[in-house]
Image (cartoon, rainbow, N blue to C red):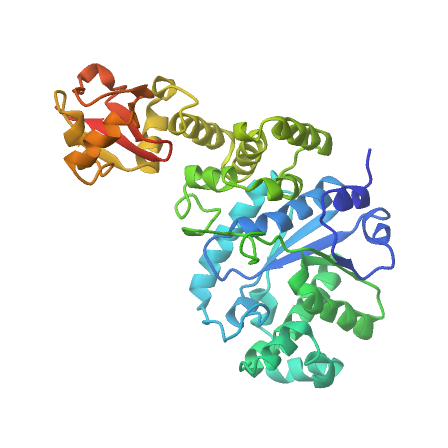
Length: 416
């Protein structure tokens, strides 16, 4: 069986670690590892999946895992990655967000066997004079302004308040608290959190003379835009089904470019490396079939939304792209189809020219006739001409699929 250090390297999860060798953190005595998440939104997005799957690897290797939601630090706001002050949230909003985030993480982990804490429990009781005497005296302003998350703001001459400036000290105190309560000796996070995490490592060394560790993974970057992974043309891709439907979630992964496919299969799924290699080889033989993208979409959707939703999204996608018949969809899948594409109500006996215009697939009757003459229109994947009139038998459970070309689709809904 592969060692955890080997798995983390193989998946591309290793960016920096405070130990001389990674194996010192991962392959010796079982450790207690924590990840802090500030609940600044009521859902995580796809960019957070990397960290969750890194933690899952630690968990499955027998290490203890602590999920720390920042009910306290979330009131302050991490200055990293921002050019201006964050909007400050109230305790009630942060508590609701924390519960939502926790539920999402437990689902991806596939277990409830984790320790959950909210740092508001101790930061909310911390008195200012105690903070200054017991924490602040261990850090110099000279060192703090050299940290990337602060220095970048200063270079841009963007204002940074004392509130945000103190964030790293609070994070360091979190590490100390978890170390004292649970023996926590590893903090993990994305590469943009390196300097914050090191603050805690240094603080514990100064305060208790213990050696604890920092470990970070590289942030996944959208190769097309150079920005942090997690955005699409439609906006952020959330893990919450109410914000990004399972079908939309599936489609996001299905649209992965070939050059990013290998990295995302390794970092965003729990598939074995041998299975990923086989899928990429099959994909390379005929890229038009998009074997790799379909596997990635199915696995990522299963992790976040469950197998049933993944199967439903996949089947609807196959129908939309002409790879499966409309009759293969059950009632729930048909509902998903109606939400996934524009819809248009029509009656039996309606002329196809009128339907094309009404459904927005043609701007005029003249243009509709031209599309039909060019053989660019199909109903349920069957080519039709200008003389066609829709009939009740064209509909499966009251639904038919009208297409112009490969990309323009409308769901026809039968009305009496």
